[in-house]
Image 1 (tube, rainbow, N blue to C red):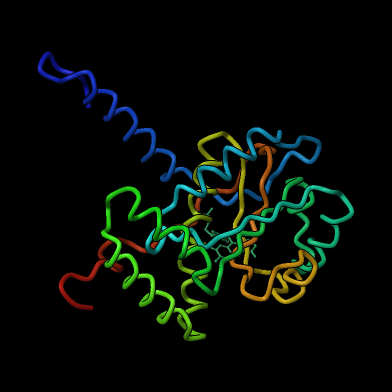
Image 2: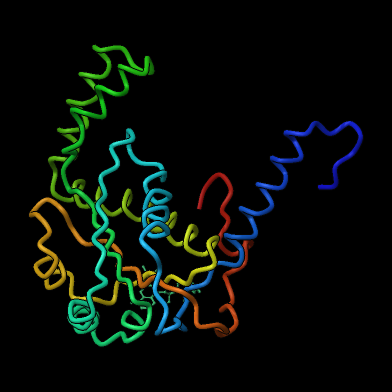
Length: 221
Ligand SMILES: Cc1cc2nc3c(=O)[nH]c(=O)nc-3n(C[C@H](O)[C@H](O)[C@H](O)COP(=O)(O)O)c2cc1C
């Protein structure tokens, strides 16, 4: 939107931020062309992980972990566990986004709800108990891990893209093998493996998307 004489300065800033955010999500691609001789620096990696942690999560429980592999020999093993997907090696960084199957951050997070004045103590205690009970079910626990960590993974992809890097989400990997190789605890499951690194340039055209008419259902399916 063009600023007008009646547009407040913060509205203009908001519009610019909004436009950049929409452009980032509309132009994001799963990169397969990484620059093999370039790596990302630690500060950028940490900023991207911080962006990932800003994703929404059930009761803000943030049930995710990010395991980064950059060592060349270890990356070779990750490539093997990902059925030979060589672009992981070219990327130079593999990030396994993993999710908790149990709400093990609940004590701390529900304390933060009360400390911030957003929930009274009694409500927080009840909600925590219900949450722990709900996720005790094996299926719910797994859903909980995958739903929350997937949102963090999408934040990570968008953050990488906004910073001019390439990133590809992958589920083509041996989940048990990678969990063992990376030493994940029993209550933490692999959700998405992300190849991350400087782009090597051109990528093929974006594949077509199903239209809004096809996917949008109003009031019922
Ligand atoms: C759950 C999931 C699993 C995927 N697995 C792989 C994979 O194993 N290897 C790969 O190269 N790309 C993988 N992709 C990337 C998709 O191929 C890609 O997102 C899709 O073709 C759309 O392209 P775009 O991301 O560039 O828009 C995966 C994407 C998702 C969301």
